[in-house]
Length: 560
View 1 (cartoon, rainbow, N blue to C red):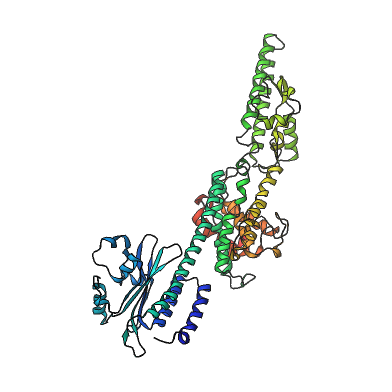
View 2 (view 1 turned 180 degrees about the vertical axis):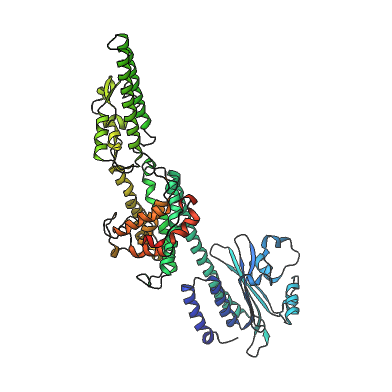
């Protein structure tokens, strides 16, 4: 055997560095086995892994004198996988099978002199390769949880002249120590994979929680990572212009992946009827039906009044009918106007607001006690419950004290007077709050150093490059490129989404026109936007995820 201290020390130091820095576990195992073979002056070495489902696989093989070396699946033809539970009923077992089953070191001076073992595989190999296997050492690798994770096997220990010797007890101890490094590396691999699986599962649980609240935002959480990856890939590929030096390491890619999945995790605290508010009067249900019933009451009152005037001969039949028809027509027009305001499709003008307020001044008689069936929270908002206990005239459109609950104002007129869209100021503030909640949630997670920028990327998707964004009013110079990518991905998905209850699906040309305006007004980064258009990132996404009805002809030059 070679002088261990003189020959192997530098190799062990190199292994130490590899254990710290190498992420390719197959290559790391190969390095360890080569150092072990060199320390033992063995001609051949083999590493067998034990899978979670109890299969024994040959992952690495090397025979120096035959110049044979195989890694990974190349060994399947050489040594087919063995299902360990089947070995219990096998009458004769190979040395490697005995080592795996008994979890004991096997050391033969001459493998063919050993009794009660199956040497047919070794004989076949020797005959096929004109080789002679003599000494054999197999070491079971057992982790700290007492699991068999693999077996290291060595053949034909040699002296300085190349003569085959047995594996001495000293050599065996050295090989046990070196091959324990494989156990350590496999444990590290298992821990890294478990950590990664735990993190991915955590992300999936959060996404499912959001999805359970709202299928619309749930789909959003799944799509934004796709757009972010497409745009980041295009940006990294730039070889000229402002982004030519932009690069992303494997950790950067994984950070962007995690951040894009978790960027809306704070929405678990946002009420679904706010997130999915399709009409201005929607809370849990669309309250336009309650208002329609009031119009129905007014129409019925008009009909009753008409009949009473007929009975009392107040006026001619023709005049009374004309008066009734005019009142009904006005009610129908007013309700149609209120209903159109409820959808939020068209921006309201000052004249529209004045008309809503005029309509709200119309009254109807309420006879039933409004205090019945209220929750304690609703009752506490009413200072004079006796007002609601007795019959009274009420406005057609109302802003009542019981419609103010905690942060929310569900007043009917208050919501109908929203000038654009369906969300009022209080609800907008609550929706924006999800970003702060997202940041707080992610800050509470002990991300490792390589994922330390998850919070930055995820928390900046509503920031603007002109410094007017939310929540920190960051400027473009204060935002990293991945954070700007997140902002564009979030906007593009929201604009192209075809499953939102509060808007019709937009065509691709409409979306790009909006984004072009956002670029021109300092909302999104112009350099990334240019890449988004020039590299047709929008088209790659649209071809896979948008309805064909949304995809129209696009000339990229029109949107730069």
